[in-house]
Image (cartoon, rainbow, N blue to C red):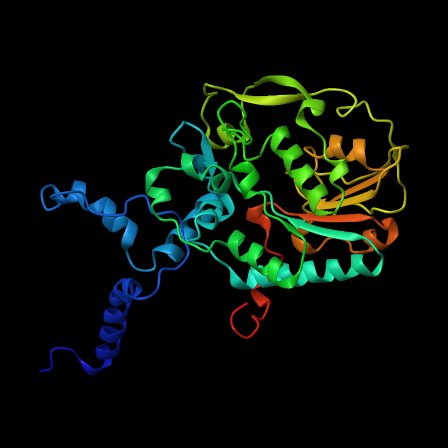
Length: 373
């Protein structure tokens, strides 16, 4: 009598194949997934293996990336507590894990098609502005994990790979002749006495925003529009709380963040007049931003910014102080209303998505050029 009856042999093959999948996953290139928290077994792992070896196994099993990514999405779907959405830095600050920001910042997540799609958009906007005699500038406010890399936990810094998506965008813009402002050197100069990013919030602060604005104006060929920090701020004030504390469900921490206090005339009040009929209602998903369109009543270029929360509020005072007319709209993952550009006719057009939102919608459908981009 055979060990397995004929009609069960195919079931046995399928069963063995399923058990082999994790092993096959170990032999394939690593797929993007949540950050590894353990990189090697503890010393003498064979002693108390369940305690010393299991954490390592939990970080290296086959198809780890897809499995944990699916698990994270499931937890979000069922409303699981959000504590795993942030990571503690070495100085007690917090870093966001959403949108694979950590993996992107250290080069574990690199989407060549996403970079290519952004390059296509940048070329379109550059040509549009060149045809009207205006100037186009692309910039990327860095993720906090990019700007404050030295404050990430050791196990994350040890997994850094290059090039990152930011590296690839910078290289591609240089190759294509697109005016691009790499803000990483600027935010790298942050110090404890002059911080440029909040410790407990996903954003940079007003000083970083101003320095970025100045760098963009210089790249646009208008260095006279830069605003010295001494003219813009009168000092700092304590800023309790932060969105990352709320996400993590933890109480306030010390030391608290600081805000820079704007002073007149840069900080207003600004005598602005709304512009009607140029900007339509915000698209679905961007309603909370509110789009800004106004004239200022004084001389200056007409400036249009296509961005997100890193520019809307943080650039409002510099824009109102230096421009004669201003429009800010959300990038909506590259699907913003192109007609606004034609109706507003800006002298300077700035496309400024935050690093973690640099990819466009449907970027995965973008064919790569010969040679991989």
